[in-house]
Image (cartoon, rainbow, N blue to C red; front, side, top):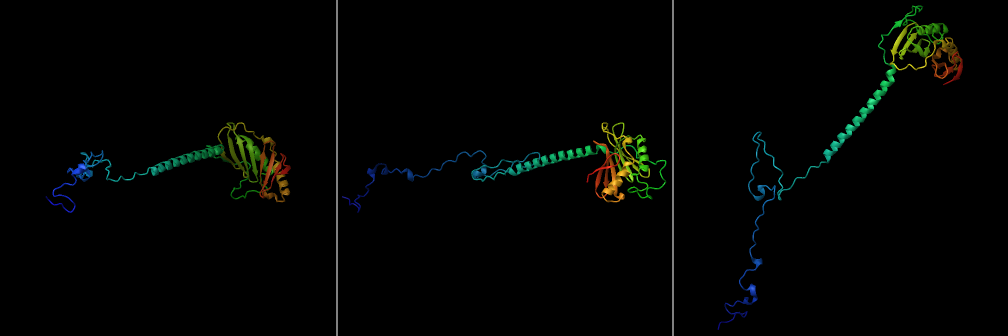
Length: 291
């Protein structure tokens, strides 16, 4: 009889025969070779390079020879580039819109300012008539450049009755219009005359007899209240000038100019070079000090 080994087994005896599937010579699944899974179909957009195959060169357009552009690869092994932020472009568009709005507002404001200036200056637009300078028949033949302008109540001053009365008569008979406003200085008369067509004509009559037509406004002033020439007392300016000089303790040469007004009540206002001013009635008597 055969001898047993130190573990009690006979030669050729299978000690695992009674353990079922572990002893039947079948290899258990854990020891079986791992089956290589077949690769699935590539995803759409995955290039041939993902499979280790060489990529074909880009197609070229037959007409221009430029390479045909392909879409970006979306293979699992490739890293997608970050998407460009659209915020800067939106910000630029918003900036352009804001600039456009600001420029539009500035244009509207500029047009309104220009329109206001045109309205303000419409009444004093330059006349199409040529400037006319005429000499009074009895004017002294002394060049204006050689004779100094009179001040105060000097001999040639228009504040004196003897010089003012004929000057007013000349304006009245000139046919240039009815008297609307009158500013009187020793050296000249500045007057606005309302024409028959409803325009305001600006004229200047100087102490040397020169009559200047300065400008003519547009129409539309027909309803303005004019001043009858007969209401202007030619003696009043000299009387008021003396009184104003005495009240302000200044020489009569410091009289700057006088204005005849027909608003509410008719009367004169006298303005001194020192800044003092007085209100007088139509006869030149001081009513009150205004400054």
